[in-house]
Amino acid sequence: MSVLHRARTLDRVLDAIGKTPLVRLARLKELRDAPDVKVYAKLELANPGGSVKDRAARQMILDALADGRLSREKILVDSTSGNTGVAYAMIGAALGLKIELVMPRNVTEPRKRVARAYGAKLTFSDPMEGSDGAIREVRKMVEADPDRYFYPDQYSNPSNPGAHYLGTGVELLDDLGRELTHFVAGLGTSGTMMGTTRRLKEAPFPIRCVAVEPDQPLHGLEGLKHMASSLVPAIYDPQVPDEIMPVCTEEGWDMADRLAREEGLHVGHSSGANVWAAVQLAKQHVAAGKPACIVAIVCDRGDRYFAPMKWERSYVW
Image (tube, rainbow, N blue to C red):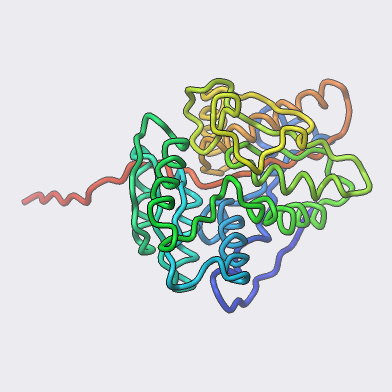
């Protein structure tokens, strides 16, 4: 199946968010000889801010502007492990809004630099406390000066899953229709899984929705939460996904490396975890001789995880 999205002429960068492409993964060795089992990557890295978080950030900001919770006199502040912060900063620059972000100090340097390039102010929390430490820090800031800040709270804001109910889920049904059998997304704020799944479950045919989470509290899958050991997002409902699949750090990292080498897709480690889970589902259907069409969310690009290098010149005389 080939889906053509024609080039569009847009009035602002916010209008470039969404309608991301689906790319079939066919060169991974598990999928090469399985024509009836299709795995697609939903390339959220094609959003202008480079990640799936563009969708939620846009929805939260536009909804807050519409109902008056946010104005140009207030500072938007939120906790982030990086991608939502970049999205807030990009959209804030486009709309003339002031953005302040609280993130763990060990967030990758590229994310810090990109957010600052858009004009955002950064505050850092204890790296040993992860995303939960950033949440606690931003809550202290807002409690100390509530009139100064608008706190969208991506972990509790219904506009976060709402963006995926209105966008991601609709796009998957438009592009694949009845062919779609499975949807796979990781659990961080859980907005992608919650919103997309709720929309897919309204389709008049069955779609199995699988949530991915790290298999232990201490892990290296940045952006994902081990729910049993974390502050659980208010928007998260464990009854929404049909299955929760644990993935170890090594599996996510190895698949991210494989996607670069075998498919030409350089993606982040949470995306690797999502695709790893999708491939496990594909293998089950191959073994059973059953057709399937599986979509995995590719959250962001791999270059978000590179440490920057200083520019160096060397001269040979």
